[in-house]
Each structure stands twice: as C-alpha cells, then as structure tokens.
Image 1 (cartoon, helix red, strand yellow):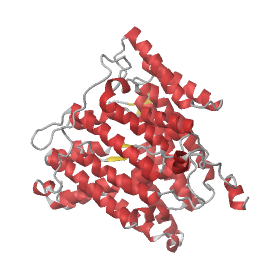
Image 2 (cartoon, one colour; image 1 turned 135 degrees about the horizontal axis):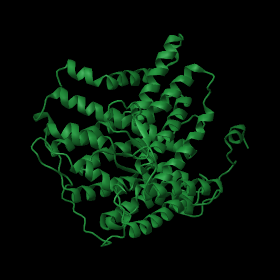
Image 3 (tube, rainbow, N blue to C red; image 1 turned 30 degrees about the horizontal axis):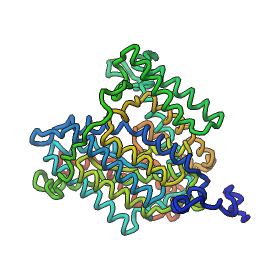
Image 4 (cartoon, rainbow, N blue to C red; image 1 turned 135 degrees about the vertical axis):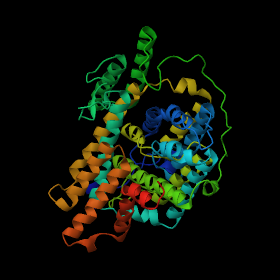
Length: 483
C-alpha cells in the first residue's frame, strides 16, 4: 500500500464489482452497497420533496407584466418532470449522489423580480438563456477552472458553512426557529418557535425526530435518517388524525383522498428565448441574466464541493470526480427548467441527506429520480411527509458536514479569516453564494495586505471582481438608471 493510500485510508485495491451495474456506478469501489444507495435515494427525495409544493406556490402566486398567473397543477407537473429527468441524467452522466430540482431563491427572483417586467414566456426564456451561457462556461473550461483554483481550506470551509446552512434550514422549516415580526424595540432577528417558546404537536414531531435521528446515528444504525423520516411521518399522520392540526405548514400529514392524479404538461415548451429584450432595456436584461448566472454558478459550486467532500469523493488534490460532466449537466438543468416553465433547476444541497444515509454514487439518483417520476402521478401520496418529519435529517447532516472544520488550519489567519467568513455568512444571510463571495473577497484582500497577491490564482481575482459587482448590484443599477 502506498503512503498516499495509507494517508487517505483507502485500500490498495477496491472490492470486486458484483455486476455490471456495480461496475458502471463504482458502487463497491467507493465503499458503498446497493442497499445504502437505495436508502440514500429515498432519504434525498423525502428531504427535498417539499419543492413539489413550494415551487408552485412561489411561481403560482406571482403575476407577470400583463397580470397572468401560472397554473399550480401544471407547475407541479413541470417541477416533478424536470427533477426526475435531470436527477437521473446526473446519476448516469455525473455519477454523483446529487439530485436536482427547481432552485429556491432563483424561483423567487423569477417570480417577483423578472416576471413583473415581462411575460412569463419571456421570463422563462431568460432562464433558458442563463442555462445556455453556463453551459458555454463549462465547455470552455472556465467553470471547472474556477473550482480548481479555490484553495483546499476554502473548499472545506464551504462544506462546513453548507452544513450550518442546511441545519438552519431544517430548524426554520420545522418551525423550531422563526423570524420575529417587525415590532418597535425588537432587536433579536429570530426566536425559539413562533412565540419564543416551543408549542404544538408539529414541533414535538420535529424534536422527537431529531432525538431519534441522532440516537440512531450514534448507534450507527443502517438507514438511520430514512428510518427517522418514515417513523415521524407515520407518527404525524396518527397525531393529525386524532387532533386535526392546522399548523403543519406546506404539507399536512393526512392520508390523501386519492393516490393517483393525472399530470398536466400544459406549461412544457412555453418560453421565448429573446422576448425579454422587447419588453425592457438591454441593460436590465443583462443585469438580470448576470445575477442569475452568478447565483447559480456559485451555489452549484458550493453544493458540488460540499456533497463530494462529505461523501469522501474528492481526490488527493481536492478535485471532484467527473466535474466537467457534473457542471455541464447542472447547466443543462437550468435550460430544462426554463423550457418547462418551472424556473431554473439546480443541484440540491439536501442531497446531503442521502450521503448521510450512505449514498456514494449516482445509482441513488435513479431512486430519487424514480420517486419524482412517480410524483407525476402520485403527488397526493408522496407529499404527505411534513417538513417536521423531514427536517431532522437536515439537522443531522449539518452535524456530519460540520466535522470537516477540524481540517482547517485556524492558526493561519490568511486562510482562517476567509474560512470563518465563508462559514458564518452562509447561514446568517441564508445564501451559499453570499458565503462564498465573502470568503473569496476576504482571501484576496488578506493576501494582498500581506504582500502575497502573486499567490492568488488569477481566476480567484476574476471571481472576486464579479462578487464586488454582485454585492454592489443595487447602487450599480441606480447609477445606470435601471431603478
């Protein structure tokens, strides 16, 4: 066994593949099993199935420039279809346990910033255009080069920051943490529960789910996360049937009246690639596309690095396997989301739930994708999992990703400070992109102050310059007369 293999804890030769599927996905080679991949696929689906409910709510609640609204049933179908197809393509083409679906945050930009300036077809055309431009960046090698230019400690900080971010998402989605209403004299932004205290059966389900999940993880029980999700969903159904609770949030854990529903593909293909240029100024269109690209670009970068690191798939140089294909598929997902009118689709950090369950390959994506495909016809059944039952998985995975913090050299301020800002800004601003931007800018500034500017890769300089524009987009728009 080589010294490198010893240091990485890798065997000198991987286990023999069981069959051709195992060989194709490298399941045994990556230390996984079919059982782990299947459990991981289910866990990922249940932690992100909320998008089937939330995306139609966000997009369906907005009106375009002409007062038109998108149909909620058609949006549900489009969301499930894109998630199913692109997740499977990522599994086969990228061989990473990385599911894709309509991106939260991006859909809000489309609904409340872009659509009011133009028609829905024009707005979705901008999403397609954004995805095509991202694909161009991938084909030219620029997107992959940027990821390779990031110092390894910053990549580790991105993973840790994402861990805290998704744990915070779990707490917020479950109602364990909530924003304090704007009241005079109130300075604390968040609080425990809805009123400063924990109350109600849904919160109890979440708390019991967290305790069950961490207990099972501590005992190293196989399928810990999935067991917790299923158990808490069944408990929530029982509680809701007895108490008829109205405060579950987006998804009520009640047995549906019907198990099968007919999908409506009416929105597929309704987009206008260059229609936006006829509805608003060229400067406005350029700035909107720039904002979409930058957010999608670095959100995906953080997610891919974080998931790969947690799955222990990064090589000795900190590089992601099949990175070029992974990024190209992610760009194609944005195109598919726009073409289907479900907004830009992107890689989901909730895939970490599947990784926590044991997923290490794209085979788990086949399971997740199949569940989204079933959701086209069985949405009533597959969306009964309340956030309070799924959110404990995000908290547990947040802990697992947090453990990478030990690999950062905290005695070297030139990397420790950027790492800290990356980790802190992500959950505090509820954005992966913001955290990466803060870390990049701090890294470049500190290196320059220390007289080590030459040590900074030119792509880090370029990315940092883009982040300056990103963070200053509001005054830039005002100067250009866009606002």
